Amino acid sequence: MEKISIRAGLFMVFALVMGGTPCRAAEATGGSRAAYWNFDKDRPGALPAGATVFAGKWAVRADPDAPSLPNVLCQTGYSEYPALSLGDKVYTDVTIAAQFKPVSGAGDRAAGIIFRIRDKDNYYILRANALEDNVNIYKYTDGRRRVIQEGSARVPSGTWQELRVVVQGNRIRGFLNGKQVVEAVDDTFKAGKIGLWTKADSVTCFDTVRVNPAD
Image (cartoon, rainbow, N blue to C red):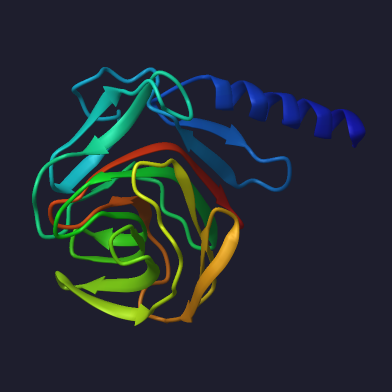
């Protein structure tokens, strides 16, 4: 058992180092799959491999301040709700963490993780906003956003931070920099893909996206 655990741990480390197209590694327990994106082997100016844009202007670009050098993924366009999925894998219970930096935006300065994505018009959102200093949980149904629960938290601009969501059954918990700041219960979506999100004129960059399924 100890040898198996050591081997699984080494494989995870190897996978995390490997770069931008999602590195997928078997978890140490069970048959679930973890995933990781750092965009470092993706071509600047292009989308990450496997990503699907729902709205907005998304592209990989170099950032000397990136948590994982040299690349990050940024949204720089204007749309009501810029969003993209990062792959086709469907998750039910899952933990998703992403580094983000709110760069600019006069009307909004938002960063979000989207999860249990059914399609471009149906999913959950955990959103941090540097202009409003809050972290909220939303559901996006039939192309309309509805707030489920609001949480107060300081979200500084121009600084790399971590947004994390833990989804277990109908329970959703949102964390900013390791501290839980919002929690909600909702039964709308049972499973789906994962992705990233911003709002309106937000210019936001993302790095080191980690997905760890519990199922």
